[in-house]
Image (tube, rainbow, N blue to C red; front, top):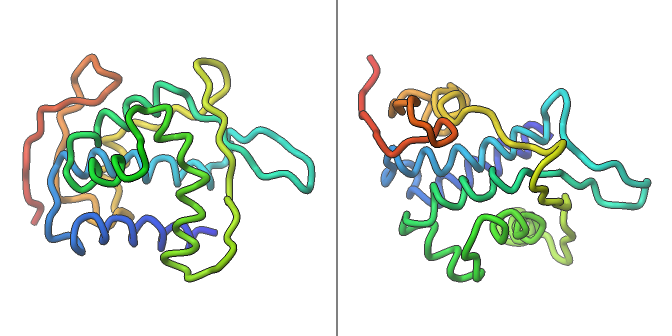
Length: 172
């Protein structure tokens, strides 16, 4: 599963950034939400709703995570066009699209036919739901396609730890 998820996230990143050529601090913050969600699938304590043997595993996602994710990506040309293509206009719709996205990935990247969703989604306003880890932790992770050393995010804002103040740096 780890390898499949790593391939999915790297494929998405390379597709959006033209293999890392067209990236920015803003894009990496947006992309960190994708990574954050994918990492939740392998978390030691994943937030899944239990189901029977024949039902799809369903992840419970906090609506606030969906809203912040959408807000961090909606103005980026590479993502805005995709959102428009799929009529995604808010965070709820973005998270609700996840099962469809798993089908599109299987069909377009893995070349599978008759693909089925790999996961279901339940979007909750409160309670036991996935709200993500701090975006800075994801951005600075060395397992990211950008190796965790492209940008630094000032994480001192009052907006759930997310900010629009970016300070670029390069590592040695």
